[in-house]
Length: 380
Ligand SMILES: NC(=O)c1ccc[n+]([C@@H]2O[C@H](COP(=O)([O-])OP(=O)(O)OC[C@H]3O[C@@H](n4cnc5c(N)ncnc54)[C@H](O)[C@@H]3O)[C@@H](O)[C@H]2O)c1
Image 1 (cartoon, helix red, strand yellow):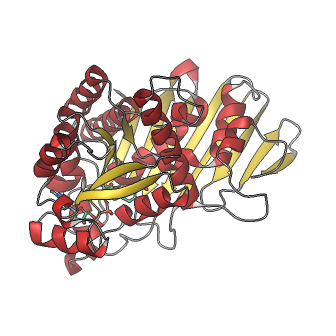
Image 2 (cartoon, helix red, strand yellow):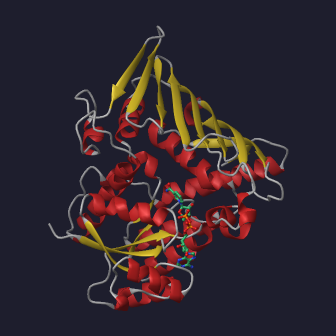
Image 3 (cartoon, protein in one colour):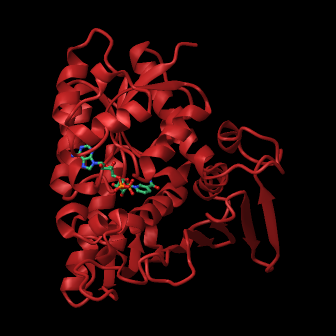
């Protein structure tokens, strides 16, 4: 099978998530890195390109140059991965889509919802894939959870708790010059949400992905515990969901001792489920009589959807990279099916889209408006 090729914007030496994307893309050997504008300066981009083994004539000094030059080639990269700080997502995605290139952009999709809806419409009018890496929906047990909840196993859903708790910004790390903390606490680069945009959007998408419910209205309290911080590092949000369900979403980056404490609890009329990212291979089902059943990834009892996202037998742990790679299998399937004018396989429909990205940005905006308005209930 011929491998696809991809370019990367961001993800230079010393950056965080770009390397994870590359590892995930390497896992199944279905795509090869061939080009990039890896850093904000041409010199650093060149250095990163050299370290990554990218041919020097395909290492670009800016994303504008990358979009222009790649689209002019007879063999352009099949898709572009955007892993820069948030403020560059919109212009870089726009440049690539306008140049006719498929895009995978990290979250939060854009700074404003106007930008996100413009990109969604642009991708759709050009018939291009524009995916957003809400990677937690790539876990097999999350996909199984979605199968159960959306399939009605627990009856009508009444209550949903989504949480994402970290502790790494408990001190003012940004004042030490730490790169990831510096831009995440700067509204010009991160957008109007702090923890809300950075990790709250993951929890919001996870909730929607599993339950199929929409977040309709929010009542939010945002706090900046870190001295001198403008953006929230802690958020508590009550949710009114579609179909009369209620929920809450909390995210925080000052919960000392927490690492990537993303969890989802869903309760319906006849039962519920619990999934925790730090133990991603388990899904706990709860029943009316109080009994609990723990399902394990890889077991024969799981849905086809979980099976498609599984590489190893149970007991050989899979994790974060595999979940990320599952998203990419869907992206590759979506791109190949467009290229070959055929129906995409089942993984493609699991891929979070520009519409999901837009809903995440709208969620952040609604929470900020609510918090500024004395936590008034605010429509998303
Ligand atoms: N999906 C996830 O689980 C996940 C996890 C972490 C970060 N993220 C998202 O990924 C993005 C990057 O986060 P990070 O932690 O890797 O940041 P980072 O600061 O570690 O890396 C950002 C990279 O982008 C480069 N860059 C900056 N401006 C650029 C430009 N104009 N052109 C080209 N390159 C440019 C930087 O040089 C650096 O290499 C953010 O949007 C973040 O929200 C997602």
